[in-house]
Amino acid sequence: MKNVRNFFILAVVFFCVGIPFALDIPTYLKMKNGDIVNLDEVEAFALERGDVVEGNVNYVLGCCAEEYTTNFGIRTSDRSDKLYYVIWLNNDNFIVYCTSSSSDYTKLDQITEETYAYLESQATYDETSDYEDLQLPATELKIQGTVSKLPSNIEGFFREWYQEAVGEEYGSFDECCEPLMITHARLGNLKTTIMIGAIFAAAGVLMLILGIIFAIRNKIASRNAMNW
Image (cartoon, rainbow, N blue to C red; front, side):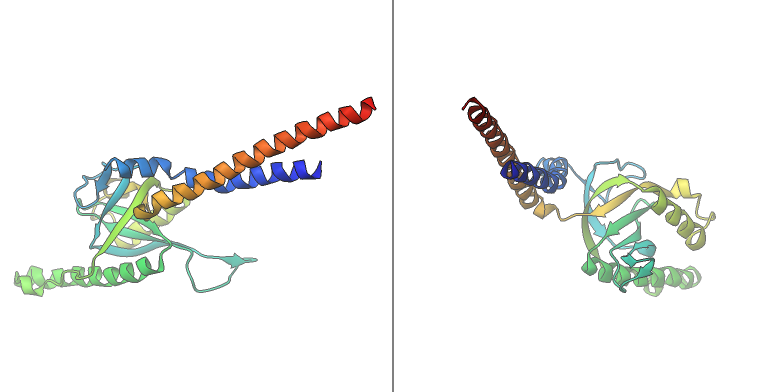
């Protein structure tokens, strides 16, 4: 009976590991079919949940939220588990970009500095009308990701950031901010990810079948022993 129980436990474990990988299948199918939204050209409020997106980020206005590991309420390291950056899209709307990539952090922080330098240079340009006074951001980051609903807690931080950093002069939050979030994804790795998930799922099916076979055998063996 112990062996049978172990097979069923392994089946559950393999299924639990494989299911998260399977969640990437819709994204992979969209990518395979070329159904990818270009962030450089998307219109305001045209993004939808489930969209696969890619594009170049040229303007960033910093972070509006952060996630980090704590132990009994005390932060355990300076490393951020996730950062939620505010991207300024070409359509003049703002959207949250969630990433856990340290290389993204470096680039996005650099773009943030360059974006604020550009905004400050605009004041000089307004006085001189000389394009040489404009300091356009030089750093660029190509991102890929999936679009999902903006979590309510992150939306709260996003609204607070908007009031402090932008204000109603630019327009209201609902008029200028996308109610969605882009989450970092490496689309080129999806095929490998799904294959790994399929392997775990197949292993789970195998363990389930073996568990059923051994359970039936044990039941038959018990009946035969009783007949003796």
